[in-house]
Length: 316
Image 1 (cartoon, rainbow, N blue to C red):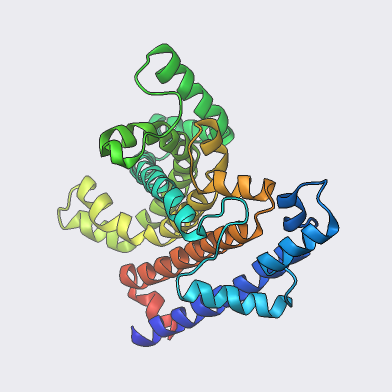
Image 2 (image 1 turned 180 degrees about the vertical axis):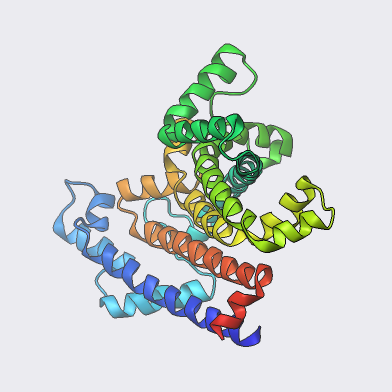
């Protein structure tokens, strides 16, 4: 297990280093001048040059890269050009919304998908299976922003159970905050659960054909006990793979739903920073999202070894 962990950790570090180089270089070659945008289109060249010097934009790219990486390692993400606020404070403030939203959406996705996938597999080629697969096909075809609008029309406009948008903040209590995140989380979970349910069904059907399933049934284990106690665990490798990718996508791709519900999350911060040419915020946010994706995949690899020892043995 130690060698398996070490290999995965080295891969994690190498991926993060490569990602930091790519993120820095891509943002360096983008057109536009942050100093010019901050000073305005009518600013004199001397004023723009002075602002560029103040922001450190006139320094060599290699030095700015090392300063940026060193700052991240020490927890100093720099100062936002547009907001004149430490980037770390901006990011933490937005993560306080984006991470709970992604966790809620992933929890709903997992519950809905596993229940639907196992149910469909247990009733293979029967009415229940056909019905679940039909619903998942519809779920995959529905854009989450369109479903978000439907949820607002039903639960906010017609039934008036939830607010149509906005976020009260965690300081006003956890229940109002969770209520504000419930509809966005549900709109995100619909498409993800439809995809995951189909993967779960396929994986469970494959495991159901194994000899140990017949052995468990011959020993008197109930059908439900066999499905949830034996089959599902052995079918979890492809399911966990998709879950890891989906959770990473939820962390990095909530900008559309955040815009529909007017939520001040990390996605909206990135969008606003791109508009303001606030490169330091964009760079740190993109790197943070990339790091979260890499870490999620690292955790998924460790879960592989915990669920199926054959993965660890084959890697070594």
